[in-house]
Each structure stands twice: as C-alpha cells, then as structure tokens.
Image (cartoon, rainbow, N blue to C red; front, side):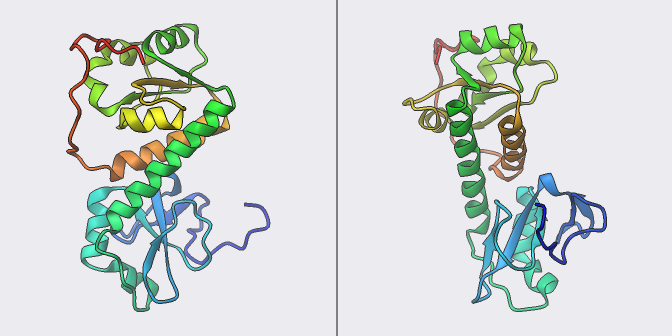
Amino acid sequence: MSGETLPIELEPVGGRRRCLVARAAGERARMVRFVLGPDGTVVPDVDERLPGRGLWVAADRSALVEAVRRNLFAKAAGAAARPPADLVERVEAALRRRCLDLLGLARRAGAVVAGFDQVEAALKEGGVALVLVARDAASQAAKLRRLAGELPFFANLERGELGRALGRDELVYVAVGPGGLARKLERELVRLDGLARETRPSTPGGSGTQRGGDDR
C-alpha cells in the first residue's frame, strides 16, 4: 500500500479499523470494508480498493445484519445511505469468490494437493499451511484434523466449489502449501467463516467412514 493516501477511517494504530456495530477498533483482517456509491447505495469492498471513505463492519453475520437493520452506515458516513436488503448475502458471495480465486492461483503456483491420501501424506511430510475439507465432509475428516494439529483447518466451502476452483467436478480434501497466497487465503476463509450461514443445506457424503468412501 505504499504511496496510498490513507482514508480517514483508519485508526491511529496500523491494521485496525473501527466497527460500526461494536464501535470499537478491531483487526482489519477480520473486518469488511464498505463504501457509498454515487447514489448512496452501500457497496461491499472486500478487495479494499474502491475509492471513498471506508465504513467497516466486523466479518460477522450477526454484526452485519445489525448494521443493515439499523442502517448504521448512514450514521457513520453522516450522509444518506441505502444498504441493499441482501447486503449480507452479497458480502458472503464476494468473500466466497475471493477464496476460490486465491485457491485457483495457488493451484497454478503448484502449491495445492488434493485427495485424502495426498493431503494425509503432505501433512505427515510437513510443508502444509492450511487444510480445506468440503463442508458436508467435515465430520468425516477427523484423521486429517488430528494430523493438522494447530494448522488452520476450514470446512466452509462446498465440494463443487473446491472442484471448480481446481479444475475438477468436485473435490473434498485440499491442502495448500506455505507462502503469500496461503496467508491471503487464510484471511479470506476466516472472514467467510464469520459471514457464512450457521446452517446451510448439506449434501449427504460418502460411505460414512472417515474417508467417506471419497478420495477426491
């Protein structure tokens, strides 16, 4: 961000922003930025690139629902603001796209392995930064979770999404190697965790064993 003019919403301490709902500073990595469009529409800026004063909300579904319900954007901006009724869903969809785009970049960089056996081997050998398991297979991944130990372990993407990001019809088990892409992906997965619905319809998985009868 060198050479960038810092917007007025920045906190004195770098990397922290003030949440409209909590009215307290939080880690920027766990927040979502919004700006007002020319007509006052509240626009999510998950890439943090749009011009204008940033309005920040914690990457938490209940916090964003509250911000929309009370239209805290208008109060913070000191101007008319119109948050779309589906703003929460728009943010979740944008974060989901960010995660999948980064996963695709990691694949092209040769930093991804997929399939239960491949992920298991990578965890045993070391050199894994984070693990992703398809949401509907989370309960079948106890062995991988144990092997991962303290590594970030996510189950907030669907098997079809994982597959499309990695050039397959669907995938269940994915590991990403260390590096800048893994760090960026971890941030987006953490934010997605906060915005994803607590209950989403799941697809019945596999044979019910830990490997779920599915080695993808």
